[in-house]
Image (cartoon, rainbow, N blue to C red; front, side, top):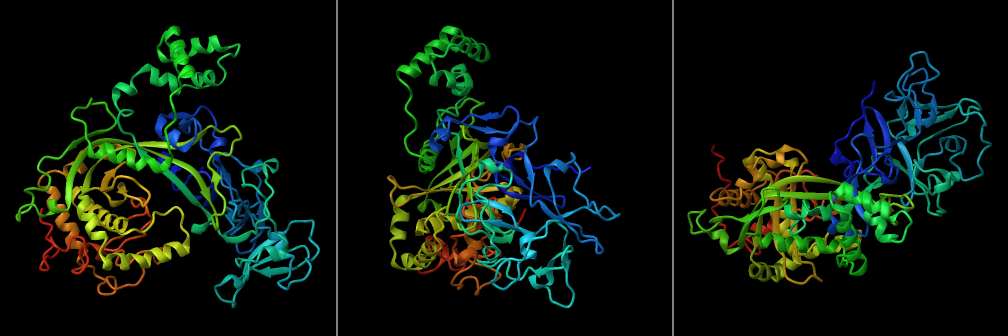
Length: 595
């Protein structure tokens, strides 16, 4: 029996709707949230839902499996004497059993084909292998297609290791063609393949008219799937236990109440009011009063959109509340003596870092809004249902610490000519690549992003967490933003008990934080690949990092909000323009890690 499982947090990223996932040698594509079965588990976060323009957020029910569609449907038998290709159908599916060859005695487990067809509008389909085999490489008319599907996927000897050695042969008529030229821009258009206008799990009735050219690429290629995940931290007053436990809060989130707001005069309105009152522990009069308030003076939706998430959190982080209920979802406090006496030279870091806030508990909600493919021309919603009023989301709990940098120090530094000239290289590449999902490479962003990576790497070592269990969250002023933001939150929110042990919060307390920053900045001065790393003109994906590599600055991509782009440790410690140049002695070395 084949057991196929993914963690709940993975249904948003990396295995969210539209993603291709390999499980135990099988390949599937995740169906959109509109295909979820059974009642959904609500994720209560009205502010984030309002910013994203939906009624609610939800996770799949734990009692119902997440729908996956076997893709690619074209598979082949790995037996050397067989190698037959089959177009699998969901009608042949047997629960918890992988497809096997129907033609050879060994009944080998079928292997999914390596290539799929995608278009710029985000549609996905199988490669038409019958048409490919029957179309010669020359640009002339297609050969007559055999009615009987009897294809073989062969690996030719003495040809080399490229696509030219892979051949699709029709056993009915004997024609064959190698995969050479399949992945070119015009590879599929030359055989007459057109976009299906839909996703693999959709019916033909759901197909859209699409004139975009389809391109063949490996199913594991990064350009097959670009998810967009919005996340937010629950902050007061919504995170307060007094709000969470209020029956009126549960009432406003119920499906009955939302229905009544849209159709207050429905003939079953009174029955639904009674049902809502019973479920939320309220009287009928209280429900009617709440409904009247919403209808006569409805609460205005949150202004703005996802761009307002970080400013809201920034305001909550720099102004921690004096008292908390122990069941609050956001509990923070200002650190005692954070950097004033933590170093022997009189608290040198306090010249650049203004405040430290310890977050003993936080709740983060992550939402998959849409995904894109290939050249990212169109956004495909994560919920394709016509009446879909929710987006897929997960909630996780954790802890962390927050550093607020001095605004005057940041303003003075980012105006240096050497700093702007160095970041201009990244700006030019960023504009050329047109990576809309990535933050603009301003000097402030690159500085705080690199500092967060160094801090995260050293925190993982000192606190005992795995690096992949830690995450960064940057608060950086954008060009069109109002009050200046410049801060870094290092936190863990992995959805299990690891984020509630308190070990990460203690790293922000006296005197550990001073030593942690000492180690982080000292490690920026040294890399085992120097001088190559320090003087490199462009590293990483799209050359959007400068002095940053795996030996010094990179972290797991689950920890980084920019997928290891926009990093440059020289902005921290360069003797001519580094932000920390005045507080770091040239004689500093990487300190010993004594227990």
